[in-house]
Length: 395
Length: 142
Image (tube, each protein chain N blue to C red):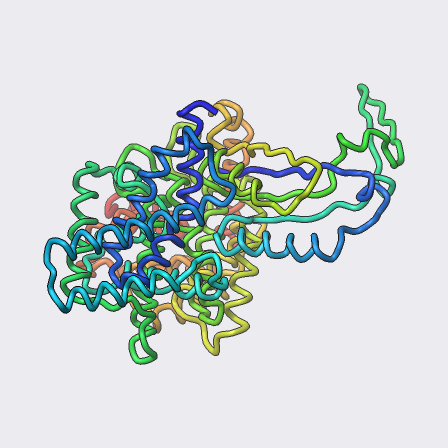
């Protein structure tokens, strides 16, 4: 293997092992920032040694052992520097923990618990949304700072700074390395889901850059969602989100025309939709329905996406069911955009006149004033009503 | 990006002999790891080639040959479809598969962006047109 090949292989090992490594270390040192530094130290050691020694048979265990040694080294160095009693006490305790905590021996569930703690910490509400996104991709997704920067089209130093600040904020706020208790679990979980869906949407309808979609980011988000679904299989909204993302991702290749222009759902060539992702999405939604008493906002959006996915054409779509689902979504998560989408569904289900009335009331909604789809929806409805003259005048 | 991992057949798989209990359990664990990592999209094992058939094409002619087929090593006994960040990651995962012998082949799946734009447009444009007309007609009826 050439050095370049070894480096690519190390990247691959890192992608697979880093989250488990950081999570396991964070349990021992009780500090996510320090855990990440230690994991990075181990990565540097691998980059130095593996080109000569070859990649070890169990690279994850090697990285963990190396990181633990680094942890002990650091603590000894701190001890020489500070020689404070309390720190000595803490060091002994940590050393004992390091000695007993053997990741190889740890059963899968334990690793899973650590990963879950790590996700909750990375998406902690003390952090700004941008910081949550960067930290989640870095700690859970195994992305490098450069990869995150490329994904969000911001300079790498900006991302690096975001991550450093986020780690400092977590340390200053003394955020415990824990899965939140029952009283805050719902709110904290919804923060995690929001972060994953924001990442997905950055790929699904990119807000920056020349490309309308960037599928690689959708894949990162899907991977995070699928990991979370296995970590908390009893949470219906996690499956709802995964189902929604799988079905939306199934349309990615139909979503862009030959010259890179966006193609809206009703104009898409449905034969290009990815059947595998659709069936995965439907299965995830089924899981959500099976364990939840009532659907949450992601599961409802997933159910709407499923109506489209199941239908051979726009005309044959069950628009009445979609209207009902938008009614439900309005109850759960009211927004003018949901109302507009509901109006479109009503237009398809019950004719343009009923929809136009709704859209006209939305016309005065300040938050929709700059929304590019409102005039086009209105124009479309007017065209269907045969009032072309008026539509040209008003639109 | 996606990779299809093709598991090559062997004498046992061709004879319809199922893997040992141990290998089955290890394979289950391996699959679970890939599911928990959000990597595995699909996987299945294939029955012996004796239950399959081949179709040879030559112009308009179709010649069907029933299995089994003799060149065991070239046959496929199962597959995984995985979604990973790189070819190297696919390799790293499959190094962890619990096989003691035999071979797998890792092949990258085409993505939409791998096709030049002009492969798609004419047919696509026509379909789009037809769909629009259909919708218009539908709307007119309402």
